[in-house]
View 1: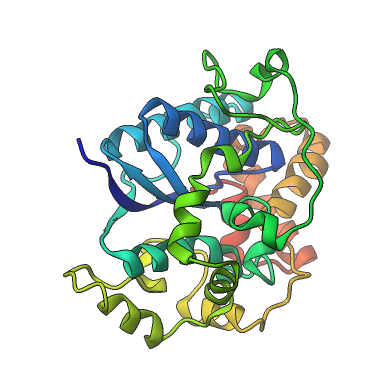
View 2 (view 1 turned 60 degrees about the vertical axis):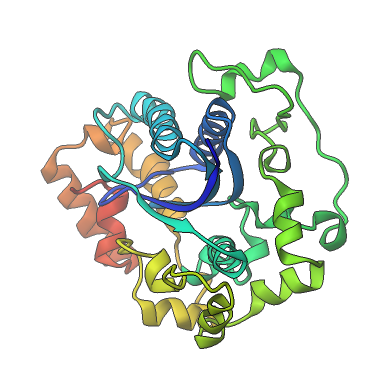
Amino acid sequence: FMKKAYHICLSSGNEIYCRDNEDYIHCFNSLAIAIAETESVLLADSIMSNHIHECIRTSSLSEVIKRHRYKYARYFNAKYHRKGRLGERHAFTVELDGLYHTLAAISYVFRNPLHHGITATPLAYLHSSARVIFSKDIWSESSKDIIPKHKQRTFLPSHNTCPEGYRMDTNGLILREDVIDTSDVEHLYGTPRAFLYYMNRLSGEEWQKEQKQDNVNATPITIRIIENGISMQTMEQMLRNEHGRNDYRKMSDINLCEFIDKNILPEIGKTSVYLLTESEKQKIAQFLYLQKRLPEAQIKRCLAML
């Protein structure tokens, strides 16, 4: 079967996908193994606290999504004493057709942390593959410390092994440069300068006009299309974030989850937000709202107030 390119967005609904750094690592490792098992190709990914963006070439779209979600949900449920499916029932997918259509989708995936006001630039975000594109031209990082095969099992879904050709760093993360088809993505952008231009270019009609050059019937990729079903922020706020009008000192989801899990839960003798009663959640929510002045929607998702 011929591989087709897709943009995929997985939403956690009213919950959080990743509560701490270990979760982000396990989430990507689950995706990396699903990519290898289905002989798919990963072009881009960005793992956010409550949703995940991916661009993939595959001949088995539903299978790669199913395997990724199943592997990660098993880990998450075991860690947080939770049961059932993690995330909304259906993934949102768009088939990518044409050079500029594909480039726009990949660029939006890389730029996602910028749109959500998590980082000031796409390249500052650690849980995305933007940093492995043209890395030799953009970064002057020293080589990473790699852990030996026999130590990898701790960081992998149960009953899984690290696929051939994948290395793992000392944090337990499968190296994104071993999973992403960097040569393919770099070929699409052409040059490091063109890549940086796309990372810094503002949203607008120029993106849509460019996609019309593909001469295909595909609906142009825009923020509205890419962020379909994600309730994290409004379109207007995402565009303001893109212009750098954002307070980066505000508490992120991962900071709030870590504060809840490490400071609040031990005080009441609970090991997970999923073991809290509704009244306990209400009390904690009220405390966070009054003491931290945090948005109600953020408090609710970090406490899994479904």
